[in-house]
Length: 329
Length: 290
Image (cartoon, rainbow over all chains, first blue to last red):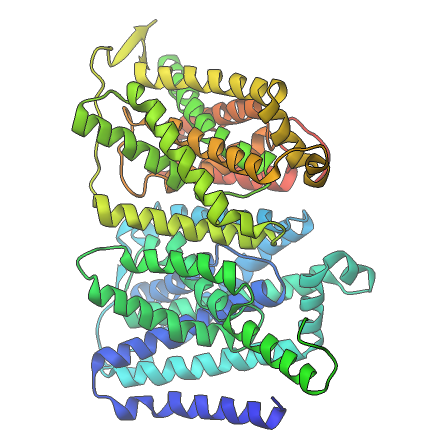
């Protein structure tokens, strides 16, 4: 596919997202739409650190929970608008990210050890939050329903839809910009072979620190949106392991280290989860069973994700057309 | 804190630590010897608990009698996991292994949730006293029995891996699978067996903890991270190290529980984990650098 075709495809996809609310009055479908966009956003944020830089975080819930809790706490206790609170949350997430990044990267925590380390950090934050009176311990926060756009409160779901759409577009543009920048090339080099990247003069430490800070901040923005949209946060639903899995899944399914991957993944995962919840509503946990199954099947049969698989097919077809390879490869 | 409370939490910590060690033994075989990071170990432990729970609920069997069945069932589940899924993952990056076993965990845990419902179930053991008193200290009998099993299993596995043909083949395969194949070891079969044994150990651990731990679909997740801590702390593939690591975690957690308010003692294993990862990734007993 050449650049023209690709941009056309992106454009059509974007227009479909923009006009979607015009075609439905159903609150339920709008809700699904919001869930898709928001899952795509947090997964895209994760993708920067884990997909591009190859630093596989299993504890991204720590950034998500930070965003949700900081913005909700500022709102509930000090009447500070979540529009400001979300950036405060992102700022704290950057600090947490830099702290964890500094420890992990200085002490050369690599591969599975980094994953397990991030998992432990997320658990530490969850336990801390649910033991602090300041954060209402295990009760969490019930946010008020209202209609004050300045306070990030809307009476219509369409408003939430367009806000999260704009947020996703911004995050996707940031990812796109990173992937084309010097930083992005450094990150990919680190993912492919960190020692080689370092020996070629890439400041791997600084690149990884930048990646974890950006990734953490963007995930926190998603967390703040979640708090304002769902209007209820508690330690397990924001800092829990299930949250980290939900962040990872769309990118894995769609394709790690690709721009479209998390979006395609979310477009499949969320409706699938809703369908199973609809048909097996009586059984709690069926949708997580399906997620588990998808995870296993994707890793076994589509380790590069859907987008990676399609790219590979297209590349092979192009090479074949040019007569550079035969069918065997 | 008075001396009696201190000693009581010390005893509780040591016993609980033995249980952590017990859960970690299977993991250290799979993680340390086979180099597979098996996130599903907690879910396998949970299945082992359900086997002994159902033997108790349906036939009135004590967990100590149904223990071989737990081990056997889990052996086949583990070998099947290796054969059906993990075998295809040889040479895949670390995080893909982690993801696959995480997917398996999600699947098994939620299948259990659908089939068994989220109820907490308990098993009672007749015929032995609940606890014995020793110098004013209470010692849980069933925890003591589990502790004894941990020691026996750790020593047994140590000799199994060094003295038997299968044990030696497992070690050879883990060191150099190509070389092992050259001298006639059936690599695939050895991998099934090794993974099966690791899973069977989770089954045994599950059976042994049912008398004092509620059986529920999510019980595995409360053990799995601690088990990872213990494995890394004790050194990969070091069974006695797993026991020592387990006791260390158990004791610090119990002492933390006596000092820290609320559920903050849950922090202890994670903080230790991060410190170990950062400072002593090869475990307390050294070994070569990673």
